[in-house]
Length: 79
Image (cartoon, rainbow, N blue to C red; front, side, top):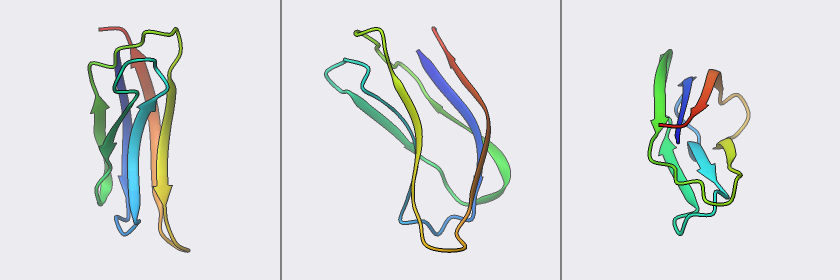
């Protein structure tokens, strides 16, 4: 499977990631950093091997007050 999302971020978060997890593969968590940008960029995780008929899709952000992240247009599809 492939996971895609459009995102933009102020970029000062301690952690800011797109992630796919709990999909049953030996490497059960895959993540991609979301970097600072005032315009939307495409972030993608490919080769998600779903072996247990489920997958948790998430954006994880550890941030302080006034730090921001926007995201839109999620896609999750079989390759």
